[in-house]
Image (cartoon, rainbow, N blue to C red):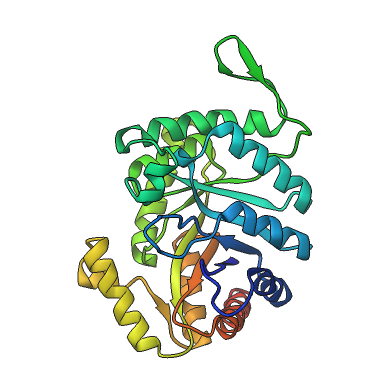
Length: 298
């Protein structure tokens, strides 16, 4: 079971690079950076710049986009950024991508993001091109003109985000992994079975599964969890029962049980955003929970 956490998309009292070094010292497998550029005043850093800074001060921890809004970025430009980050980091990039959770937002419109009906088509086109571009192979993106990016770099693992059937099919067709989010272990088990069916239908390998979620491990967790659950009901239209099953909270032993439940449901990795305050302490508690879960599995 690999464990990942995302850096906060604001200053949170500690520079992102210091937080990333803390995660590496705690033995995390990867540090993630969410793509939360909305343009309405919501805090959000550019994920590529943050991970480039993290690459400069770390040596072993993987650098994960969790997940990048693919239809918002030209494929050639993104390929050049990933190529560069692979060289800067010694090949530690994990490229999580999705259709984008904020279509129609001010930043989306200002940056020329694809309309809702075009997001899937644009994402599929980019996923066809990105591996070739990153490897430095010729790619015809304009009729009669080929693009070759150098120096070539290893193509990072590509994880496809989203809980829908379309996202699962996209992960099987183009990805190395599938990244559902805001999902309970019980619901994940059913989705994992369906993922295997899709892979069999398409004659493709079954992608690895990396679950994304939110943890509340320190501070006033009761109030923070209540607010989070309410947002899932109001914004994501979940039922109160479904929403209440999403947040990860409790003691390290209780969190270890939750990680084990995800593993039993088919997850190879769990990535949790740490909400509710005292980020460094929460990172330590999650690392402790992972150690307990690994001990139970052993």
